[in-house]
Amino acid sequence: MHEADLPGLTATVLWAAFALAVAFGAIAQRTHFCTMGALADIVTLGDWTRMRMWGMAIGVAMIGFNAMVALGWVDAANSIYAAPRWTWLSNLIGGLLFGVGMVLASGCGSKTLVRAGAGNLKSLVVLLVLALCAYATMRGVLAVVRAATLDTVVLELPAGQDLPSLLAHASGAPRRALAPALGGGLGLGLLGWALRRPEGRSGGVLLGGLGIGAVVVGVWWVSGCLGFVAEHPVTLEPAFLGTSTRRMESLSFVAPVAYAMDWLILFSDTRRVLTLGIVSVFGVALGSALVALGSGRFRWEGFAGAEDTANHIVGAALMGAGGVTALGCTIGQGLSGVSTLALGSFAALGGIVAGGVLGLRYQAWRVERSL
Image (cartoon, rainbow, N blue to C red; front, side, top):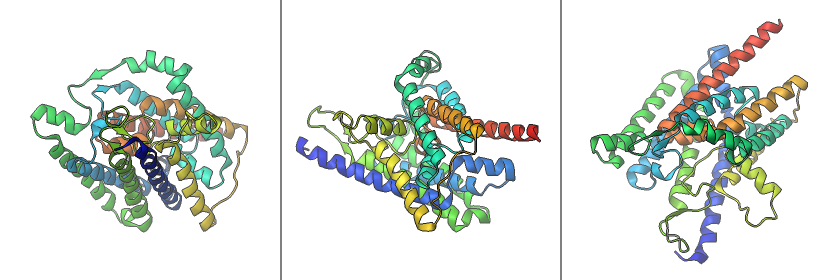
């Protein structure tokens, strides 16, 4: 590939990611896809419908990603999730903070973007605070604290922390054969669980589960296959075009929200360029807005009072700091990361779920105490 061809291919990658993000936002708005909402339905109502939707999405993402590994299109080692250096405590604590935060802020990063697209002004405040705290945790004062505490607890693994790599190292079996077996087995198990009950086979659940999972797989293909250059004409090294991490990426909505704010603020600085994460942030909001306007769901909504404002600000701060510490959110770790079968992603997901349940129990306790 010639250097002159790179801008055109990068633009193609970004437009493809943007289109998939628009689809994500539209599906999430149409089906009420929301991890926090799924947990709340279980804790407060005993309703597992939206959890089946989320489980279905994870299953589709696992099957799709590991099928591409088997075909040689992508490799988990090229993502940020599968490094041999496992910061397990950061994954757990970061996930826990994020889970509590998403309850206080009425939704995770992706749900906040979906709500912002539908006219929710509270979500704009949440996004701004989330972006500020995420940036501080990546590069500011909170980054110093994170690096000196949680990130020092490391488990060095003999291979990448994705399950196919670890089992391949232990057994000598080919990783490309183990990936579809493990990913397909776990993914089919989740699909079977989601479809076992009638509510898991409803139109909305099928659209949300299959659609969101397919979008995550699609973005993996865009960044890991379409945007992959085996030998960059300038550096002569492998490169993934249009990504902020310079690795293969799929959807995530904590660090990209911070990068989007940075791009808007420093737009005239030519060193700030659009990335897959940034265009995904705008795409989700646009997709949600299109469906909300078309269905009559769009409406302006503000804070109910000072307490509501405080809860959302604290929640946004916890999501920003926790999401960066955990290396992702309910989508970044709970779908994209988990699809690679990385140990850190499972740990972060467990922390997010535990934090979400803890946050919901706390809210219920406050309501009971006020009666």
